[in-house]
Length: 150
Image 1 (cartoon, rainbow, N blue to C red):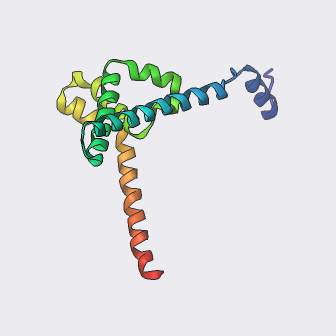
Image 2 (tube, rainbow, N blue to C red; image 1 turned 180 degrees about the vertical axis):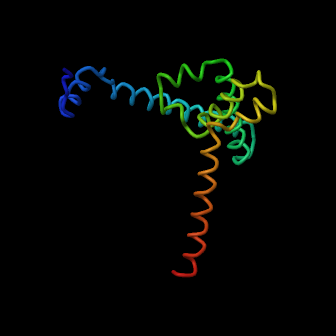
Image 3 (cartoon, rainbow, N blue to C red; image 1 turned 90 degrees about the vertical axis):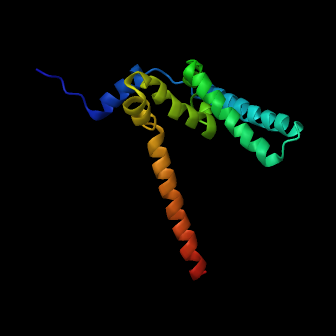
C-alpha cells in the first residue's frame, strides 16, 4: 500500500531536508564585490582624467577598460570563479554584459566563427538586448505621445 503524504507534510519535509542558505553572507559578499568593481571604475576614470583626457573620453575609456577586463577574466576562467561566490555583485552592467557575450563566444569557438562564435555569442545577452531595445521604444513612444496630452 502506498503511503500518501499531504501537501503540508511534504512542504515540512522539504524545508527540513533543504540546506540552509547563508543569505546575509551571500548578500554581503555580492555588495563588496560589486562595490569593488564600481570603485575600480571610479579609479580608472580619475587616472584617465589625470592624464589630461577630457571627462567624456575618460568615461568612455573606463567603460572600454572594464569591458576588456571582463572579457579577459572570462577567457582566463577567473570571472566564473568570482561570480560563483559574488553572485549578483559581478552582474554590474558593463562587466556582466561583457561576460554574457564573451562566455558563449569562447565556449563555441571550436565550431567556427560563423556557426560557433557568431551564432552563439548572443545566446545569453540577446534577450537582454531585444527587451532593452523594445522597452526603450515603448518608453519613447509613451513619452512622445504624453507631450501632446499634458
